[in-house]
Image 1 (cartoon, one colour):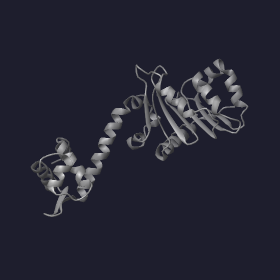
Image 2 (cartoon, one colour):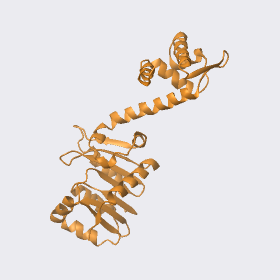
Image 3 (tube, helix red, strand yellow):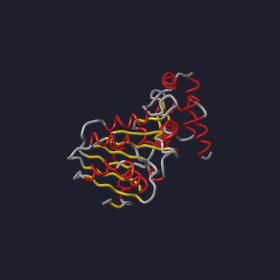
Length: 258
């Protein structure tokens, strides 16, 4: 059989998946597999027998039952990750559809540990509300951001948490800079007065938003009209590390504004 046939075999029966997961926890007899999987003993026996034929399981003894082989462990671990990635793909669909190429390196395991927020007909401002929650209202030590749009809400939120001692790095594109200088000149003037503020200008349009405030990162996706439609945020090490890498990748392609 080829790989597709094996995948079809495994996913074609919920019992087989449950038996595979049960064997991940240790050696099991058919009766124990049946109890753990909620199926008949004969059904569990057929499933584990098919695993033996494929080299995924082996029989230890009548008393001990069956256990996974190393090949079976590969299958079990790979299937768990595949299913987890499918769940993330479905749940984070709007975020992924609206992210630009810069964020292509993010993986499903990293996203799976974040808090996902999506704009809906009932609550179109949910990602923005989540953004404000992440920013908070107390001064922070470090503020790093990438924003592809001009936003009064962003300016106000930043103004609340950026203090005299806050280290600030902000990346915008040329159009956002020009619009900000025209519509919010006061905000730029106040930013220039901060000792720790550095503004970076990207010549090419930015297509996603990113905020890192101290140890919390927020990733925002925008539609073609500039509306914030979905976000993912978190404080876990993997997502923070990815966010810092993404920020530096974009920042290195910019020039400091003066």
